[in-house]
Image (tube, rainbow, N blue to C red; front, side, top):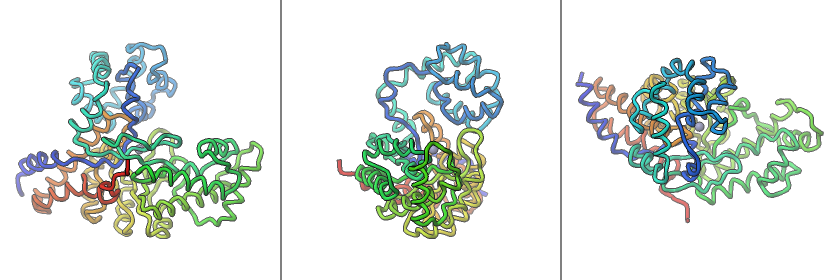
Length: 431
Ligand SMILES: [Zn+2]
């Protein structure tokens, strides 16, 4: 056995010098920081907020606590969170937040004596230049792929980001009103399935022309990932029921042929344009989701029927991490992404990476994705993932399962090079 700590120290220094490619974030433009005051309580849009609800905090209290316009002062907001905070400080989410708040703002522990000072420091820091200070200087992230929601611009700040639009909303209209909302977004008439298909294609082409890195499918929050082969007449029948029906609830079974057909069409069209497809698999953020809907093995038929499509399966499929490994091992067009897992559980991240190193070729693993709404979270989650990668590789070197040069090469692949190749990041869009 080699001395694990000395290997770790050397690898830690070397891997810190690798500019990261971060495969997944939800960060909004820096301009959105302007014109308001910020506090600790603005960091509960996701993650720790879900653990607070899981720990018993009433949802109403959460909404009041995190609403900057609730009229409450900081002390009143702290009092809402205080009964539950000790129970969520210990989870992966809580630990990650505590660590990045400490590293960025110099507050080692968040408690009733420190939340006010922490909030003051957060507000002082969130000024123009903060994104560069955090993402570049502190985190050494070269590029983060950021989700853009339906209707949002894909014109992101290319110093930091490349856009990954969610376009699956063309697959899930369920009411006439939702079709009319799509018409407004697309700027065209959508009264037939062919018109819906044309609108989807126009939206994809408009995004592709602006240099997006991939498209995102988010549907595991809404339905099963099993997209069956629906015929166009079946899809058209479902479309017509939505278009023609007066307000009435159509069941999932009524809508499924249209959803399946449109999602498959999106996958095929992305493949034709050589755009990868990022798919949410595994744990859904929030409370009260159906985990069985998100098992990555549900995608096997689509993966086999679209061999030219390239799939980036998210979140290690957690808790289906072995299932995802077997998919990436089986299929040349499936890549395995650990984004967010480091914040869910550092232990799961490390165990999964060990398993994946054994099972998945080295060019098909992505280890860095912060999956945060905030640059502070992106820094914290990416720095944590980088450290966990280093620990795993140092353990391998110590066990003589890898030598040091191979470990460093492996770090370069999964922290950076794999994502550059997969998302073709050298080919920047024409400005
Ligand atoms: Zn996400």
